[in-house]
Image (tube, rainbow, N blue to C red):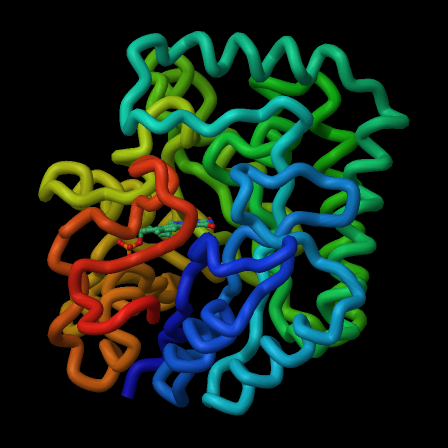
Amino acid sequence: MSDRLTFFVAVNTGFITNGLPDRRFLDFYESRSSHELYCSIVGNVVVPGGYGSNASTPTITDDLVWGELARGIAYGGARPGIQLASAWDGYVGARKFVTSAPNTTIQQARALMASKGRHELSEVIDSFRSAARKALEHGFRHVQLHAAHGYLLSLLIDRRINPLADFVLDGLSSLAVYLRREGIETSIRISMKTGDESFDNAGAVEFQDEVAALPFDFVDLSSGFYNVDKRLIYPTTPDFLASRMSQSRQVASRHLNRNFIFSGRLKMDSLGDLPSNMHPGLCRDLIANPNFLLTTQNGCANHNKCHYYSRGKAHLTCGEWKSSPT
Ligand SMILES: Cc1cc2nc3c(=O)[nH]c(=O)nc-3n(C[C@H](O)[C@H](O)[C@H](O)COP(=O)(O)O)c2cc1C
């Protein structure tokens, strides 16, 4: 019997109506909750006053639908979790998988950070705090801060991009401590690399180590910036999958006292030799088959239909679904 905890890592489904989760959203998460799953982290939920990464991202509010969602997941057997996120005014996600000008994204990120003072950064931290409080009032029991994929927090916490990163890291640490005191489990999701090779070659390990030292219960190891190279976010080919696994393993091995979530088309029956602080995160296999954890068969078949935004569509779909939409 393994003591590894299995997570359904964040998915931005696009199943919203008037900015809030709709029936398809609730059904999607309820049908994938089970006692085999430790925690289901509802994907990419925008903080109050924040900015969505596309037009199909919901914002957390006082609306009762959020409580219904948390209860639906808990009823299925998993701990209800939520990923809190923001982009910024004017953010546009690339449709292409790989940018032709990788260093432009980092340059623009540095320019954006240079325009932000402590007051504005405090406001951002406050909006995450307010979102987290709403999440716990609705019954979520795991709060994840989305500091990966090139969204706002990933720029704010990286001292290679933001000269005031210390200030933000302190603010997020206080939030993690506050949530722990409230009995809420926490995680922070980061991108181990951006996909911009010259940027990644200097300081990536220090960045990972700095995040691993923060007082979150889990660090969720993702990779890639959306506007640099999405192949790192959704690794598919054997080389991208192997590299994601090896980087995750290296980070976790350096911090055996910290728990990590890792993902990338994991083979659930061959996790045995990994450090015990590495907890599996599944995404595409569970999208494809809500019962994937029971048989670990009939998962994702790489149809690539789930990448709805890149395909110019409004919501998730999957080549494995027999009927629409979930
Ligand atoms: C359709 C789709 C939507 C995703 N949305 C999010 C998201 O909202 N937030 C996030 O951090 N990751 C998101 N991801 C990345 C997944 O959480 C996961 O890290 C990635 O797919 C690798 O895991 P897998 O190989 O098990 O699919 C998304 C992935 C897919 C396929």
